[in-house]
Length: 427
Image 1 (cartoon, rainbow, N blue to C red):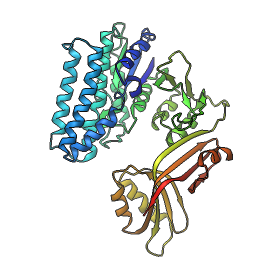
Image 2 (image 1 turned 180 degrees about the horizontal axis):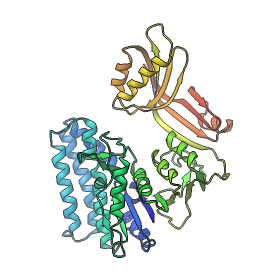
Image 3 (image 1 turned 90 degrees about the vertical axis):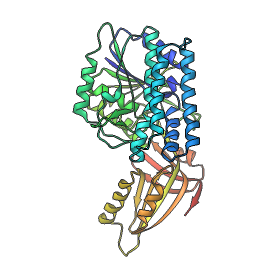
Image 4 (image 1 turned 135 degrees about the vertical axis):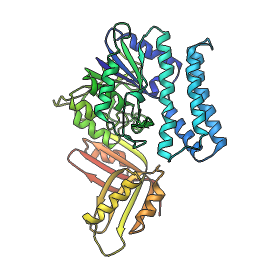
């Protein structure tokens, strides 16, 4: 059996949903699990709605809610000309829940509130896609992912409770038979032991597909994208890109860890543990072979891979007393970063200074700086660019740096990371 995952770009409008049905028609004779993300850019839209609702910005909240509702209703009207179709009732019930939640005073912290609201992007998508597939003759069972994926309560980045989750998934797979040949479910979301909605981390639908594959010992996972496969760079940043036909798990993990957007960082490990191949294919040209990530360690074309992270912040930390950057100081510094859930993208230390690079768009930034300043002198540069090159050479470095000032550089045998200026402001 196979796991198919369709991301937001592959179900961004009514025509895209019809294309999903067309793709599935080619595989209808074999058992499948189909995982869908929120439609288009709806996760971003729900994040904005969550922020307005949590902060009490009623006017902006209602406007954003209206935008989200209209987006989904437009797709519904295109897919189902009859406004009495039961799909409208399903979606309306979900919007009633959202409306109640955003007007509720039960917020219990932003991360908890975020997971309750943002998860509806996937729930709406799952119901719309499922309704259309049933209408078009693709008979299946629709399973709410929150009833299958069990997690802890680390909201916004929940950890999977594997034994219970695997049992739930295997039980759900037992529903597949000749009359209902596949299961459709949502990516990115789960629930904690108390039944509260959780999310698996941004872009976590890929990870959901890997969880199902692991639990079911799947033959392969196919992620349907708007690109022909795994490219060596984002084509919106570098015009000349190369498709990588085959890559091993370890290199894929490295690329995902450094920020390659085509794969969620947690996706590869469950597949590697059971040697399940991951295939990246184009939903617009499904007949093309795509790219394969597997345990095949045979030599493949060693092309440089470029990963760009924008809006980065460099923080330099120096002890206020006469101590050095030793194990004790590092223990305290890492504890502060962990407390505010700020991920470090790059780090480097000298005798008296510790420098880190983090994402600039971070809600905990001001609190982090304030906490660090209690025992350390802190300076930071904002609006920087972090460039990671896998399989690099000097020509690659010069091409992307383009005479800009390098503030931080780190090299290993296969990878170089460069933090460069892109119009910074200092403090």
